[in-house]
Image (tube, rainbow, N blue to C red; front, side, top):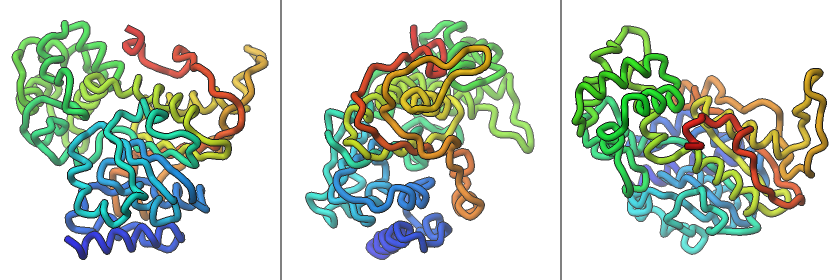
Length: 344
């Protein structure tokens, strides 16, 4: 295990200097989670120094990279209480430079102020998916849980109490599932559902597995996970908190994995930047002083080398922005591309 940790640290050190082979991270034996788009984050925010906040600590990949690249301190935030126990085997190597905080990143401004940078890696980690008892995976049988914080109502509570119309809306709006009504009806007919295998069986009864296509439960599991954890609401609150917490010239790096998340991040940063929202049909309107400076109009995608080494990177998008000196302000959630369910 010590050899694995040494290999991970050496690879991250090489990333920060732009020389490492991406494939190394995917071939590290017991490493539970490979950080996605790590190389462009480290390269584009260099030189890294001061105090950073990793809002989705997980297995600690981004935190270690930031510390090894020159950050004086990294505040490591995560709502999953298990991740800090898993980090005990290596966290002492960084001493007081690593500050763990058990919290949702929606409240990250309570964990730190005048930050030099913030990193958010959204969604569920492969580490959580691999733990059948957490209920995130449709490939393993386990309790129908899906709670990242391990508190509050579970996915089983949701599927066993929601109406057919409510379930159909969740699947369609949060999972972009075209067969949402058919699947919702099947879930109602199969209730009570208490395990992931039971939910998968209900879904595949009306949406069979087809060769060459993604598993028919993929979008439904995504939708239920988002609903259980209020992920989209937490995302906006986290972006607003980042705006309040960053020092002038501080970096915000957000990695998303599906279109719902990326649309929200894109529209938030556009609304906070100097980029015009006008068109020939709707003239540009005078807006408040920009609070962020976008670093490129398009999201950064993983290169072929990273995708080959880590297929999870294929769907990832990175958006970078730099904080200005303008005062933080409330957001108009209605203009950020949120599904209607968020407002209920």
